[in-house]
Length: 269
Image (cartoon, rainbow, N blue to C red; front, top):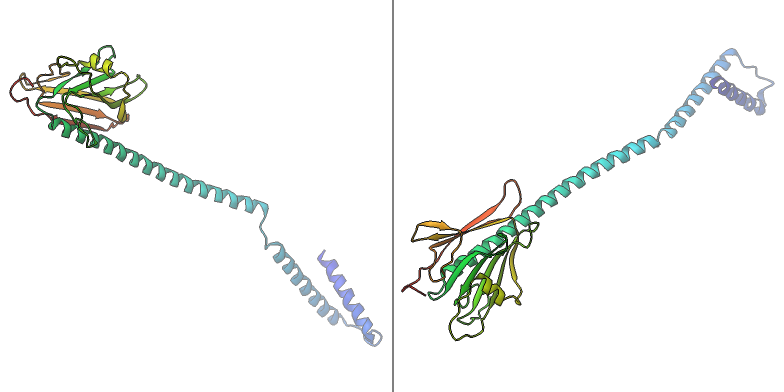
């Protein structure tokens, strides 16, 4: 291929030289042929270099595919990093929100139990027939107990604070309801079942939900023992301990609060 190109270049030079009118009077020597051959060779080499440079200036399909693969890997890595960071931030935010809910609930309970009136009645324990899936506080004659609004209820108002678990697949809930019992000739005391029956038509107000486990204990100052329920509404425990486990993880988070109750003055409230 190269020799053919050289010959074509020589032929073109010879034809040009002949058309100039000097072909009859000039006979090229072997040296002239060597010079012409060298010049033609350099010209062809320069053309080949320019052609190769032109063809090598673009990218091949394989190079484009490799670049796209690297780009996809980089974008995927960035996406995973951002996704993990957002998930971590969301988890931390949810944990902080849960801690705030539990803290606010325990603060409200502590304040209300501490300010319980002297004539108020308090009883608490598991609800019969609920298979240990509901624990109920019954507070009577305590107007304004667990009320966030500046509204004072009647002196005979009954407040129900329930720790309930609707099913074994669901978590525990802390719920509240209150009602004003119908007037009766004699002041009536409600136990858990009677209070639930009287307030059956009133919906529960959910305070906190999705709690993994709950625990309630009452400290009897007379016997100096912790009890699982408090039946005598005319006396009060010295302390109430409430434990809420609100995360189902290996390192489960829990909140334990102890509430002090003012003793009944003058015997029976």
